[in-house]
Length: 150
Image (cartoon, rainbow, N blue to C red; front, top):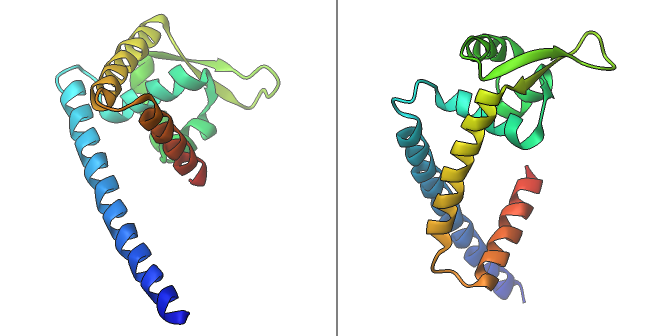
């Protein structure tokens, strides 16, 4: 019985390594695609990610936004200052917490979000074009579960 268990463990380890490499390859390809999209557009990839988060979630506290991006609030403050100057975002006081500042998209920022989101949607449609409806549902389920695991 333990021999079968050892074989299963070895197969799972092998699968884990293969999944790991495929995820890394996908991440690298997606990152390269995003760099190509934003190149020469006048904004950085981190600024686009900030715009994406605000476009999806609406106005956010600086701390919450910094946590989602994975930077310090100090680093985010410098980035937000530049984005305010570019008229992509604006700061506003929090309704119930006077110490908190929210960051929100301007109309220009919202337009940039919608344009970038459309490019992501087109990429998704291109990548899943040969998949069945069941494959797409499975992919959605798997990515949803993986995102929840973070």
